[in-house]
Amino acid sequence: MTKNVQMTPVIALRARKSFSTYLDLLRFTAALLVVLEHAVLLGVLPQIGALTRLSHESVMVFFVLSGLVIGVSSLSAGMTAGEYVASRAARIYCVALPALVCCYGFVSIVGGGATHGLPVGQFLSSFFFLDGAWFNYAEVPLNGPYWSLCYEVWYYAFWGALCFVRRPSIRLLAGGLVLAAMGPAFAALIGTWLMGAVIASHGDRMLSALRRSPRWVGPGLFAGSVACVVLIASSHLQEDVRQVLIARIHGWWRMRGSEYVVTDYVIGILVAIHLVSALSVFGDGRRLYDSRAGRTIRYCASFTFTLYLFHYPILLALKAVGGSQSPSLIGGLGVVAVTLAGVWVVSFGTERQLPRWKRMARMVVTRASRVDLMSGSSPIATSQARAR
Image: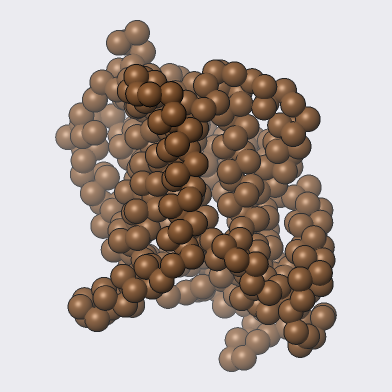
C-alpha cells in the first residue's frame, strides 16, 4: 500500500442491511461481555461460565470490527483527509472527553491515595491517547478500559497515513513514522485491526470464494469461529502462552495490553473468518434489518461506545454504595441493569450529540486545512473511481 494500489471496490455495508445490523449486534454484545467480566472482577457478579470470561476477546472483536467499518468509510469514493479526521475526532471525543472530564474531575475533587488536585500531565497523556505508547504507563483513573481506545486512535492515524498521503514515496515514510511513534505495544496488535480493513477492501472477493464452496461451509465457519473463541477463552491457553513469552523475552511485561499478542492474533483471525462467513449467511437481504429485533439492535448499538467507556466508573460507584457484600447472581445482574440504565442516560450527552461534534470538528479541520500533505481525496479511492 505504498503506492496508489488498485483495490477492489469496498463492500457495500449500506446495501447489506441485515449484515450491517448483525455488526451492530456483535458490537453491542462485545461491549456487554466486557461489562459482565468487569462486574465479576469487581466482586459484584459471580462467574457465569464463558459469559464472564470474554472481555479481552471482545476487545479483539472491537479491533477487527473497527478496521472493517473505518476501512469501508475511508476507502469510499469522495472521502477526503479532512472529512476522515473530522469524523474520527468527533466520534472519539464525543464520548472520550466527557469520560476523561468525569474521571479526572472526580480524582481532582475527591482525591485518592497520593493524588491531589488535577494531574495535568496524566490528563494530557490520556487526552492525546498516549497512555501505553512506548513505555508510558499512565492510566485514566477509575477507567481501566480506556487503554484499548488509545490503541485504536493510533491505528486510525496509521490508516489515515496510508490512505490520504498523496505521494507514494512519502506514504511509506508517513506510515513508518506513525508506527515508530506509537511504540511496540500498539504496533504489535495493529495487524488485528488491519484484518478488518482487508475485509473492507477484499470482502466481496472473499465472499465469492466462499460461495463457490459447499453450502454448509459458510454457516459452519460462522458457528465454528464463535465456538473456537469461546474455547480459547475458557482454557488456559492464553495465559500459558503469555507465561512462556514472559519467561523467554526479557521485559515482556512492558507490552502491557499486548502481552497476549500471539493468541490475540489467533482470536483476530477467528473474528475475521466469522465476519466473512457472516457476509455469506446474511447476504444482501434485509429481513433482520426490517424486523423489530433489528430496530432494537440498532438502538442498543447507538450507545455502545458510551457503554464501553462509562460502565467501569458506574460499576465502581455502585460497588462503593453497596459495600463489601458477597456477589450474588440476582444482585449482580441488578447492578448490571442499573449500569446499563445509567449509561443510556449518559449517552444523551455523548453519542446522541455526535452531529454537533461533527459540525465543530469540520469547522476546526476546515480552518486548519492549509497543510498540503494531508489534503485532497484518498489516492486509493481515486484509483478505484478511475478503475470504474
